[in-house]
Length: 402
Image 1 (cartoon, rainbow, N blue to C red):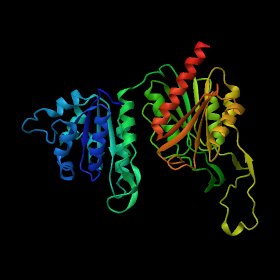
Image 2 (image 1 turned 180 degrees about the horizontal axis):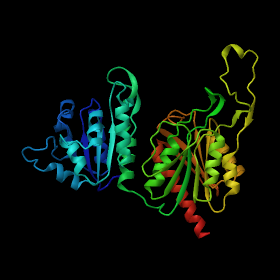
Image 3 (image 1 turned 90 degrees about the horizontal axis):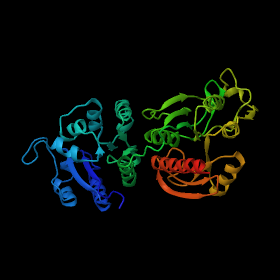
């Protein structure tokens, strides 16, 4: 059982997704966890506390003060190894961000010293509102794990981002919080992320569909394990993980300079960015008018192969690359690892559902320099980041013993 002996405090706030917390509770108990439940009064209007009481075999806390529940806002967090609030509404996120303690859950977050995981759920485009995104940034900078909601049909009938993330993603986050690893202390990890943009003219550019999520997840995972992390990132809308030093770039040339200039500082290099393979040879200094494009050709030239340059110029650094493919993933990834002289490569099929650019999940195959192949099923990118860091650790240990 994945969570045997873990003491988990499950908080449920007032969202229609509260019914999904019932399934989450059942899974946590089946995995061996001891789970206590606290609910807001609004949550109790969606699902009765009795349901959670029966499944958890513990009384459910719903109020700051009440018969048999005095000081529960202190005792429950003190007894917990991790607090998970699922679903967490936009209102609850705002309370946690500013330190407002006007109900049981928000008071618990102020008294808790254990890890806090928030799984947001909301409707009507609320997740994208600047106020909500601002609160999320504050919480993440404070070290709170705020999971990404999923996109799909919402309770209102609209399609948007706001659905409670999959149960497996929440469980993986709990596992990571319960068993933090500090196996990267003393390591200096240089990571690239996101796309590059190559100018055609002042308003147009060549780019790709990379969201940067994998690189950012790797930066978060490496930092959580105790490493110093520099994240060289192309244009994305993602918040920089707490404790990570960002280096903002736009073009492949800028990324080349940023990575090479920091190579000697690093002990591990992970090239997760999707760098443009070509750029316009002669970008226009003025906007190209639509009426004047008849017969016009865009001449391209190749960009630098940053990964090969890093591998050739390294001293003792461990180099990790990525291979985004649409077919024969393992074969093409293995060939790229040998051709570029890498220590580890992560191949993934970007055409596979749940594994493409912009998704929160990914399936992959890890291939190391000794030919060991490890297939990874579809999991969250944060969980995949930990798998990659595990493989990096194994290579470091192997290198020391050989």
